[in-house]
Length: 112
Length: 117
Image (cartoon, rainbow over the protein chains, first blue to last red):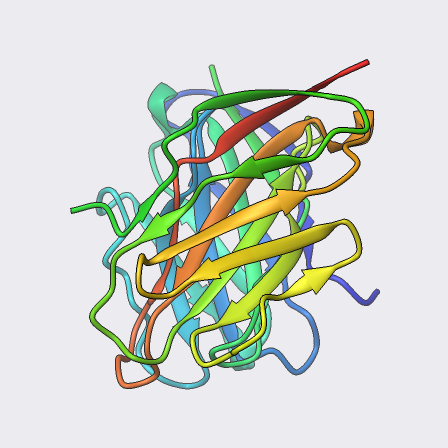
């Protein structure tokens, strides 16, 4: 497809379990961003990848959160030992460097 | 300090009327970009319009226009002839100068627009 895709669209997990969220950016986009959005709130920046450079992890809320981007394309956000406060929509966006970000549909995570 | 301020948490507008959503920003960079996104209840983030700091003309995209006042550091979104489908959250965002590496894209808190029939 032409847009950013994310999977799964919905994820329900139990407290303490690990989850992996996937993002497929638009082909040719070198920059990839992860955001978190709690219900009715704005966007919280998590992590940013640009090409082959070291990612900007300054937004990750705790060491339970990590992300990687393999081959400069697909990215996986991993949350270990999930907590109820991790429940949110996780949005991924991609862009050409310095250009407009285009967002995926998001993954709605619910931690019971 | 907030880099992007949207002072209107909620706005109402009558269908077919025009509405202005406020956005002010704070940057010391000379080169930057300003963006508006729409987020309907479905949750998707939809890019609407872009204004570069060196652009002399205000950006327009269909019914959307950006009222860019550089000296005042404001980038208000104007929606003309509002439609019921315009009801959504609207986010203003800024990408700061290319001299900075790392994440340099910041979003405002959003304005919820409700279009009344």
